[in-house]
Image (cartoon, rainbow, N blue to C red; front, side):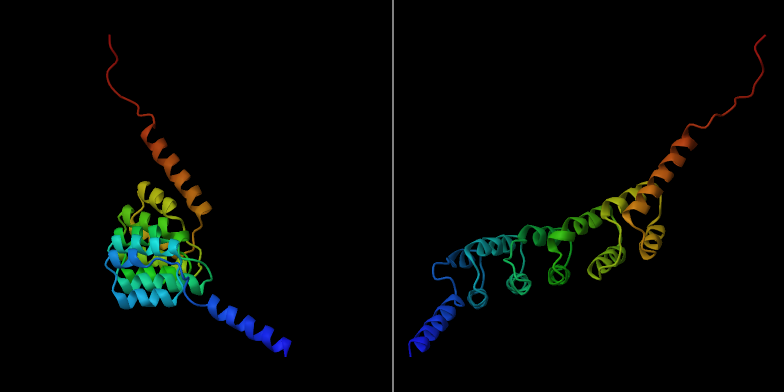
Length: 202
């Protein structure tokens, strides 16, 4: 009998623990313009006050309620609190769609490749090349960092040539070697000796 009571008490404690945090303040979400139905979804996800602050940042960046909820959900599925509002907002600000941001979030790489992804847009690559790089990232394939891609572009490689190197699986180390070689070749061509022919002075 005593064992049964203890077991019942433990079950009640677990049930309470699985409910929303009783002191969580959801008012900032309402003030940020989130629909009540989406706030209820976040309550169901048992969000914390720090997570609410993160969601408010997303709302201020113009991200939809549905994407906000899904970003939190993705983090919880990966068994951690959502704290990547800055990465998600930067991606949207750089021109990525919310669907693309969610793809990155579902792969658990918002903070891992977020900066690289933003830099790819700043480099001026076409959308198809940016998608190629992101796809390789998300599939776990070898792909150069945005810094190396940018430097290769600065050495005079065309985007088509860069894409060829990406598809071949060029690593950062291999890219750095090619960058160095191309820079040396370029510097050498600028300093080559040119013999000036002309009449000798009398």
